[in-house]
Image (tube, rainbow, N blue to C red; front, side, top):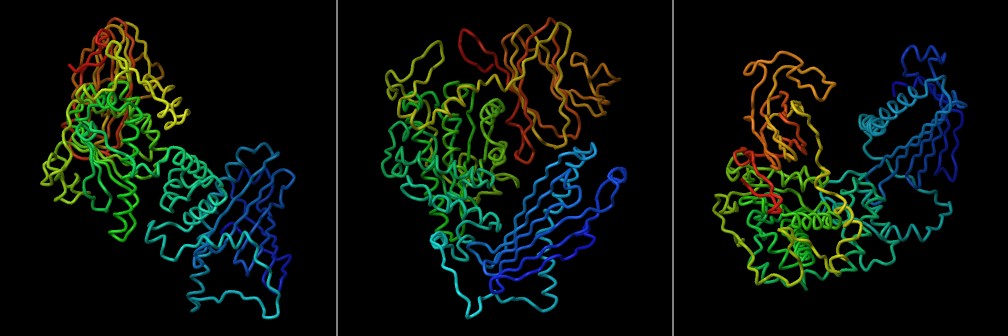
Length: 624
């Protein structure tokens, strides 16, 4: 390590029949700091005390270091540990932690903290490099195997405690993880085993989950073991309380689902993942919700999730390789403003939260095909409740999605592309149609001026935890929007500096008072900073249309109580300006989002601007 100038061994001793070696060093380190900083503190070097404990029997090396210099002003403590993997003895694990407590440091406390963090980040990467360096050195000397330490014949052997015996009962064969879970890093495997052992201490669990399930919950919590433990225990108790393990055998598909639910399983993709097709544009959300109630619709979703787990396991067994996910093919042809029916959206969000909480990391990809012009607003509503990791799994395609190079053919074999997308494979999934009113439950819902309120039965309240209800109920769709008050003759502008060619800009805004003029511009020249929101960018410097700015979308006159949804492919690395002008003064609620080009495939011909108006008399949003 370059900052280490010199080391002096001040203690070195062997203990317990040679199984342990304790070594202490005084290390001289170069101060990696600006010149002025070193001048103020008056030193070019600092000293640290390092204590090493090598345990040959348990195959661990622990290293602790504390600062000797300036110890009255600052306390630095660092611990590193090398150890044999608990279940794969051929692997070496490394972990590192540090603490920094600055009491008083010549007025440079903040700078010292920044330098400490920088140095710690730098040395963190050294742990692996150091051990690889010495392994390489041994290999060059012709040493590829080192015998493990064994106790002398006449040495007494300590008794193995019960806890250690219990831990050894959890054992993974050498290739179990590779065969069933795929490639995991040593640290990930250690966390997997740690969480598995923690579950042994939970008394009220009827059965322990599979390693695949444990892996999914760890991944969902970014490999934080304690967070994953809480999430998994909550889910396992939820499954016990509602008898989810028997759902596959006991669930009987209602007639309305068999006849009017446009979804079903359809072969596997090129990775062996089962595919579920949902023709959402043909789904009668209101009819199904009135026929099944919230409880019935939720049970249908949970049954699909349980089928997905079953089909994942069957695919993995048949292919003899790890398969951990299923894929969703979401066909949006026919999607219209009627699908944005508010109670239907609320039901979808209830189901989404329940599924994400109890079936994390089971869906590998979501292929969104044939998205119509109302798609941007539907996406902005739903995506607000989906975490960033899940959103990254969504792939969007235009109408020519089946056979283009970057289309579905990249993930699906040609012979299983569904016929409704231009493929040759017929599916068992029908177009459903409207649910006849004869299927509706009596008194399950009440209509009031076109709006329907969901009366959740007690069973559904049990299925969806109370904190999930509050999370949804407190989230009004309007909270996604920015409210803007415009005076007469003033403008409102939103600037998007695009660095991702072919990304998609989507917008949705409501005109709450008087008329507005809306235009989307592309500006090729560098724009100055604007401090006054009431001033237009066009007032700050000279602009010539067709030279340094272009009208990407024609000016649209939006009237009182009208809503506008639209989208635009940003092909250039330029600035895009959303521009509203108010002749008489107006109130505006606006939301926009940029969809990454990496998550959009195919052409944008199906994502054209949509224009609609809302009517207080109709009580809903109607296309125009």
